[in-house]
Amino acid sequence: MMENSTKIILKTVAIILGLGFIYLIRNILALLFIAMIIAAAMDPLVNWFHIKKRIPRYIGVLIIYIFFISIFVALFSFLIPVLSGQFKEFLGNIPAYLEKANEFLERSYFFGEPHNLGLDLRKIGENLSNFSSNIFSTTIELFTGLVSFIIVLFMAFYMSVQKDTMENFLKSLTPEKYKPRAIKIAREIKSRIGYWMIGQLALMSVIFILNFIVLYSLGVPYALVIAFVGGLLEIVPYIGSIISTFVAVFVTLLVSPIKAVFVLLLYIVIQQAEGNIIFPQIMKKAVGLNPLAVILAMLVGLRIAGVIGAILALPATIVVGLVVDELRRKKIEA
Image 1: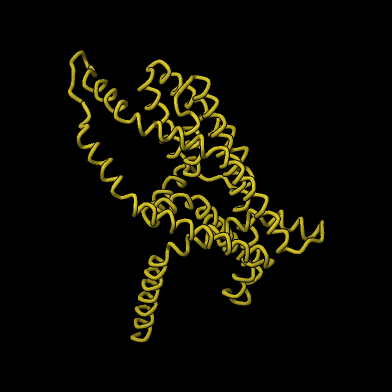
Image 2: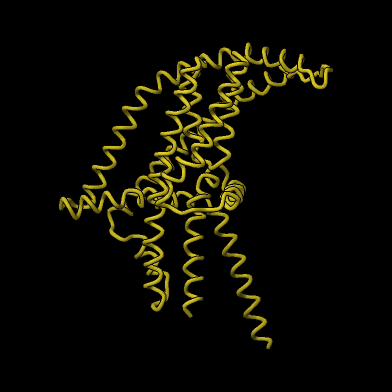
């Protein structure tokens, strides 16, 4: 009896220590997970090069890397000058925009009575000054992010060059009698995550184009910047589209309240189309998840690993869902 109690205590302590260790290295695990997502997305194309064209896997991966890097370089060589110019102009006009927003809030009427809702421009100015003083630390963070991105690309390259890396990794950690099931789960995870990655990129591109068409057609200033930010924010489910809508409406409101109403209505139309048509069609190859489960997973990811955790919440939920389904299926079969 005493021995059993001791074993239970030791196992509990080991589990707590293991969870604590995982929490400490959560950023490293996040980078590994991102590399797995990239490798899973490239896997069908790498296999096509290897099987259909008889091209070695490492050359196939290099071709994919060179192709996408060339696209990004060409795209950003066009977008960065425009984005940079619009962003500088926007920063230069911030004081005028804040003054307009201040006047609007001070004159706001609720139930026929004015309310003093003016902005404290001095505090906003102090915050902008603090932001300027933190440019060095921001530069360090950007450099760290660039190094992390390069490491992720190297890990993804290794995973793609070595065939069935995920399957072999799980096989090495799984008891002999569970190896077939572990390989099955690994292949399903790789397939679903790959489809999610491709679908997410397609979704971000579609939303960017639609947002830009709306803003540009209405003559909203900084249309390219706002649409670009909106496309990037699509990587955060549900919350990202709300934030991008707020940014677009706020900037337009400072120029023309009437245009702001049209922007709000058209953004709502885009969000409805995204939720009912675009997102289901693009993500139908991945997995259908309950919206509440996605939001809860995103909040947990945000709490554990910040923005990266929120971004990785959906693919992590896909993985957990597949594992749970497989365990449930095993229990039913037993």
